[in-house]
Image (cartoon, rainbow, N blue to C red):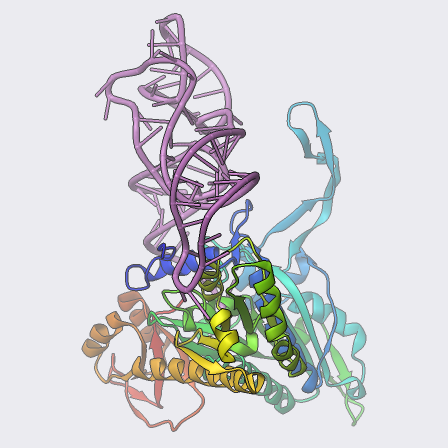
Length: 489
RNA sequence: CGGGGUGUAGCGCAGCCCGGUUAGCGCACCUGGUUUGGGACCAGGGGGUCGUGUGUUCGAAUCACACCACCCCGACCA
């Protein structure tokens, strides 16, 4: 078999790049830092969207859409927000081109915008400016809105899915009457993200709180889910922010409470992006290509016929038709790959590379014996089984694959997590990657020093598990509990 | 923006030092045939502003200068 893919052990970063390109997930566009998401990649994203959207609706949210453009002055209204995003904003300055004998077209200097427009790096400002008109009374609260959109952050260095100048995401923006409600919402959506990651992506995550230096620009508190990738680097997979009254104050969003008093509303925002595609790949895939958890696989089962003639192809199609029907009745996506321009061996390799969880192969031998060959992508195991009750067996197999992927990822994370008590040991252990649980004195200075000296950052202060006090590994000062350090994407 | 590198067919590359017929190879693509239980084989075929511009020269993919683009490493980050 031709070696299409750099091995993970040879060069993990190159493996990732190869895989994204060769599994037809995405490619670089001619626009610097921007990617084209190809149909196979987009289909997986659509499955993610669908699952998440259902979870948002189930927690009472509705979708809406706000503009791509944000007046420059809006961004400046919340001081730390603008500070956080100013360095990576694309700006629209003109609204017209005109033809030019030398250059074809040029920007029409006559068509300068009076106020420049920012391409949204996130939508808090335009949304809160809009909410001002929507919220008057406690009866208008809570306001629970999500939007699916693209955003632009002009990054210096980009990587397909993990960091691109333009990316797709969802951003939830909610308004509440009380601080407690807003905090509850922040945690509720964090739980939604964690559940999605674990149940759909088969990716175990740690829920935590960001330190001040890693906090979202404009938030009082940023919660996150962090995951450990196969190469030992951590990846932030989703964030949920408690925004306090910062945006309400910046945009004068007031409501009248039951006591007829004016109060600023309390806010949250939360998002996950196409970065999840990167997380999915970095968590599960192997040297043979992509591995997609069954619940997110656009095609869950593929049937590869081994036919020497058109008659045989027709016989195989008839042989498997009842199984296809039964699978579809269960809501399982299945395709008979009857393309006669490709050989079976080619198809085996291609579907494997693209991550299809289950493959059925059927040849003349199987039709004589009443069997099929069943292969699972996660373990690459093959077995010949009787065609009787095949749809049920496959349904169970898909669930088994989903479970196995989660368990494997969990085992990987557990093996890659260590508690460390001294800074010397930390410096040693961090070289091997993984998550490190260590005590920290809570100061930004210590955090910055560790980052400077080891390139490791505090991924989060974990929410779950007991918080046992100790002494900071760097300064020896008191620590309320261990935090998670790692080198991160 | 600093440091390094690369631009030759859709992709991956050779040719460049030392200028000289019609610019070559592998993969992919097209046609025909034989094949088909893990990326088949044989034969034939199509496809090129050699990144752009200027210069040197009888002659430039090859030499010089300028520019552009992209990639890798750093600073910034979901």
